[in-house]
Image 1: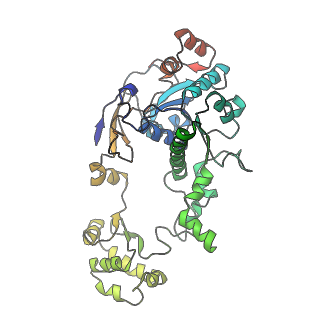
Image 2: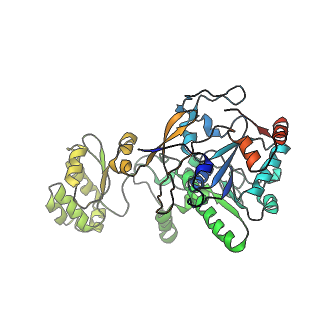
Image 3: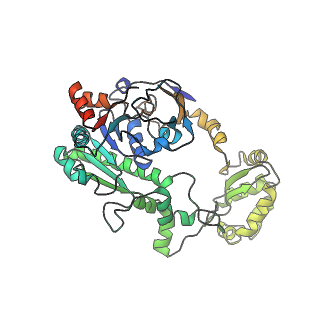
Length: 430
């Protein structure tokens, strides 16, 4: 595990991180939007996270589990939470939090002023809501024509469903993913993590990067319209193509592959192992590894097409062999076979994986009120940029309100107090 010492944002090395000098106004909450802005923050962008003064990001209360406060926290003014939720901590590193009430005129004025100083704005409100507050793209591009304005919604900015709120599990159901997920003879099930939200955050992150490149050529920003629905349909990939090209309705296969056999999870005496034999050579290697070389010569299983046609008989034979051995015994048999294989690991086994440890996937960051916290670091390493070396802990609610108003907008102490007195902003002493 790689220990990351807490650094101030100013202590990062300007010019070395890819997005150093880029400022983002983050008006998102929950998962898709915060995941997107976290990725931008990992790359060096300054992320200003806008939160409601009392509730904050919804995920602050999504627990247990919570990481409880270790150091004294001023709760005389700030909302009292049982701690910081693991959910919130997972997608909000490298950000500054400001407590702003956009329903107040002074709050909206602050957000407009911030938009004029930012390169990127990311929001995930229902279409039209921010426009009613004069915070929509058409409003803000007038004060900052270079602004890249990214909107993340459930269904997109147009169409009959545009005003419907979007939720990962609903879109999984509505856009085909749940229909193809689950055991062959079982009901549809959701994926174990909110993959539609996460993929939408990834798509939006990529779109923002492209828009920044386009701005270098045109001098203007643009509006990015990202949605859970279109993201989910796009990642159906070959499954969608099979339907669109061949008229083939999809079905659930469990861990099996519709066009390859064997390619699935097999039970062992004490767990499960996933094995894939994608060609004839790999299948022969599997047969040799389990001590059944003649199985590769059986006329029912000579080619992949044969094996798919006779899948049930083949799987029964393999299950009969593998289910009599422990997971470790099966892994030992398959080692150096040239086959793709791996155990089905729980999370403890995942984070104890020697490759996960070797790649410093887990980072430990010092939080000023929680003490040391562990998190999964950035997924990509750069040869010429220290991405992931300096990680800021996820902020407390409104931790940076005064700092941002003063340093970014140039507010005086009196102007800050006026914003607080009018209800547009909140200050908490941490």
